[in-house]
Image 1 (cartoon, helix red, strand yellow):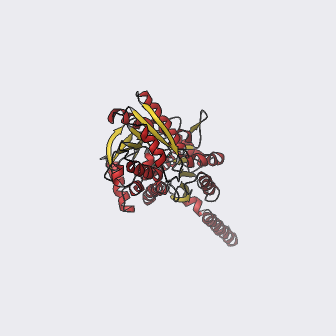
Image 2 (tube, rainbow, N blue to C red; image 1 turned 90 degrees about the vertical axis):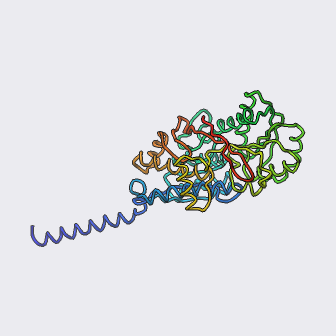
Image 3 (cartoon, rainbow, N blue to C red; image 1 turned 120 degrees about the vertical axis):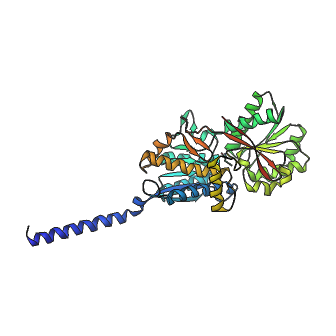
Length: 387
Ligand code: PHE
């Protein structure tokens, strides 16, 4: 080859290399990071829920990134605030998918917010994992599984049964009143499942009343409930309203056990109701930070070091949902949303903080629950119930 041709060849190689490098730079973010969305209740009526879940997920991604990421890429976790409202949750989902180009989404927390956003995920074929939404319809509706919907928590038919059995067997209750949050799909579902199980145990529902989110004064209804003389009162709501209900019930000299579900789990509950009013209060939850299990204790220690507080169940479930997603990306060996979706459906024997995740054909894990007793403002672990 002549000198001239060698020079031309050399130049051609340099031009090609520059082009390759430039192309590499252009798609830099695509090649070195994976965008994951978080649709969370960062403000509004159930803000402690969204903040805890986002913190839990953040911690998991931080640890995974520090250990080299997944498929050699770093997770870029982008959070959108759904303001604790269903319509805003739909907006948040749309923004994450169309603007932030996420390959998967964690969230939302409250079932109504997740239900509202799930259509967006289905239309765009981007999978989501709700860490915490327990209403059955989130993943399975009209006799069909929703292909892009997954969760890392148990569902309400189980949670409702756990508390009905606790009322019948442990508290020896024969009668119950149910006080429902009519603005929440979660609350309406949980009330229905509790009733079914309590009646199957031989119990009677002596009164059924309803309230709405943002209500402040529950005294008239509580007075009506008191007149029916129930052995226990079941309030499957969220901490904001539940806090006021428990406080006002005790002020009306209602001394019977007050019971609820995971929606009671917030540091704000004690602030709103007061520690004394919450005594003789019980609720079902996903985990207890007092669990001696090594995975639980490591998570509690890591979370405390990061955020300076004890993680609630929402934080643990947010952490677990992040692990579930990363496990699926690894098994898919791809960050393509459809491949991640297919891998998520195959989730099996994945050891996480709140148990071991194996999804059934409705995309729901089958997991144990715990019953928590409120004692002088502290959550005390009462019992663990297996499905
Ligand atoms: N299970 C609740 C719902 O579906 C959300 C929640 C989970 C709240 C865990 C507190 C703790 O709306």
